[in-house]
Length: 639
Image (cartoon, rainbow, N blue to C red; front, side, top):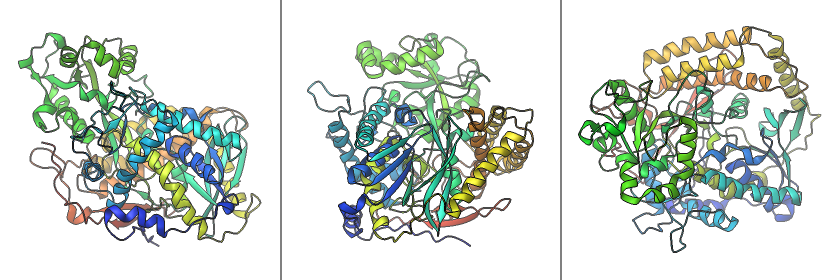
């Protein structure tokens, strides 16, 4: 049976939808809020902000993270900045321009209403964070500074040197810790969600494993919020922390939550290139570097001279050449494909040939080394520590790598999934970025969802429900616990010959080769043959040492990789069905004469929401039509 996808989009003019919706939503009396318990899974910007804000409102909150502290959430790794339509530079920015840039940047594959609300709320985020003491960079006179990011011709990105995510997370962490001390939030660190409990069609709790003791526990609630991030680690090598995983959203998918646009995965153009088989992750170099750095390769294939010895007329500043209007600040999907193209021509740099230069010589000459050091000093230091090359003297070498996932669990305007009571925020949902996220918009979405949207919309759900009382003795909790225990024991009992990491690495290579920066029908069909075979071998020959009653990181990884082996197949199914190119989803069969993504608006202007149909059954495709009333669908051009 297919799902009914109702986005619950408010009627009326675009600029009035959110205010109108807030007025029309049901409210929970302040005295009644303490009667409701909300489970929040994840403590990064979206989860930490949501838990703190809902507790401040009066709800009882349980917050879970698999790290030893909420401060270690992967939001801390974001470097470059956060967008907001403040127009402090008086350079033509506005809420509508941020809305339009985001819709266009996502290649017209996101909802107008959700994106406009994001742009509208962005201005409040900066005020909130400044009030918390986030040390944003400031101009000489004391005003907040801005810089540019990809896909925009205005400066709207607020930043804290190259540590913006860390500073924003510390702000959310302070708010969260205040509520923990006040007793409004109960924090569960080193705890991983392993299943969602659904009773009478509504999300009523989760099953967790204590990662230190191995204890399986039940936690009931009146509503559940997933803020568990993206699934980029399905590729093995990505800019994500090694612990980042898809288990929470995948278990929710198997309990009835539709998974939207899983093939929309972002490749970031500025990462340190792969150096060998020993690597377990890749390192991001902030997009902010493209403000002052110029991207180039040698003009001729096979030119192995020291970059400092290559004269200007032997260089190809290919982004400036191909996209003169945006230059080095072209959007991520376009910049990544352009880098791949010149490397495929044999003009790549470095030992592997998979790299391009990011050169600051002109900026240092124009502005002086102290200015560049002030703007990017910690990033330059990190690069030198990893590569043993001084980027003040030698151009950086960069190459695209998996960074972010625009796909995620389907949600309506209230951020509720197809399972009633299950809300999904931040990168874990699909809602705002379409087929390609613009730089500095992830932090914006996480904090918008956590501070300003979910605290409003969850009240509308709770006020409209008469929820029966449940506890861990309910049959649904017992069945879920039994299923988790059985799966755990099955993994431990295989006693095979291959490590979990070897399976993960092999899966990642399949995904990168056939469902990475570019895809085609033949390659995706190869992947769909290889992945089920690899999954079968995993369940036959994986080796998971240790036991389930202790700290066992091999067991943690095994469960996560088992989920990746299923999710990867869905990603390839989605990529195969979407025969158009759009944003980061580049089908080689669908491109313009000059090699740009060619959309098929007549057949694919919809959200593909996949529904779990059971073991060994093909997922069911549900379509939510995308309606554009305020912007005109057009071929993206950054030239």
